[in-house]
Image (cartoon, rainbow, N blue to C red; front, side, top):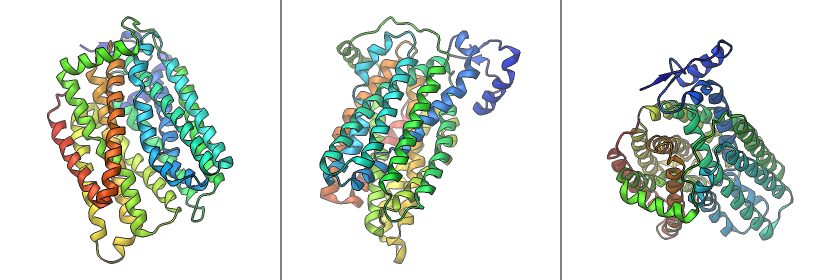
Length: 443
């Protein structure tokens, strides 16, 4: 039963702004957070929004799919290092999360773990900016990869804490909308950065890449600052445990909670959207012969797609995150098929970068739906006493799968070629759509 709490008159305008952002009639009606958290929800909402904006902008400007490969190219790192970027970025962020869930559970206020993760990511981004200016050859590439590992581990630390704090301070049916608005704002900022980048010649210089990475560091600094200002009531600390106890409990959950097991199967199949993005960009470069100046085009497309995607998926995820995952899976299927067929187009279309750029942008929109749908579903399906464990276990399993599947996909790309690989990923997306249809509703 929803509860109504009173907000002082001085906060009425802030409440109205929050209600406008979430499309809600009354921010004082709460379903699954305590009265104390409900009262300060209009103040916490914008802080979550700006924190997520900083995080999403930083993620875009330090993307392992776009920006970091160019960084390795500029400093002259060996080509094989480029293949390690996405697995290290994703798996490094996901794998350790089960091991830190018990530690986070022991903290009555989890926002300080979030702050620590944000500051570590900001520091790592600034180190990458220095390497853009000073790094060279194999040693420079090795330092980039080592810094990326630190950044990814810090991202994993923040991820568990962020979702737990969001679940404690923002009510159901408002979380997805807030995350959607942050993605829209970050998309606009990324669009501006890409437009500036396109002013450079065929290759962005060391200074341009360093500038992008400094802005990414500032984004994570904003993330940490806003997280520190969130008003979080102390939570229960019972049930905190070490990593091995978390693993045992996690395996028990997978056996006993069939919905959770089914969700993780669907999430594994949805990896197709993440794995297809760099291959579509690669296919576009090979077919069109576009130089490094294509980075600016892809960054602009990514920013435009982020602006379109996040508000679209946010409110839909609050109504049915299960349906969002299914629709995003079908979108992945269509994007993979379209990209595989572009080389068969007549004349100049087959050798232009723009068909691939448009498909890339469409898949960015779709991938935003995958991410937002699964995040909202996982937070809503987990009770408050086990939310951190559910998030950490699911992310750890996905990290293992990212390393394993990423290696297999890389081998298939080498053996079958990029176009055939995209057809394989299209079939995987079809399986994800079928799996999502069978998930129970949690909203």
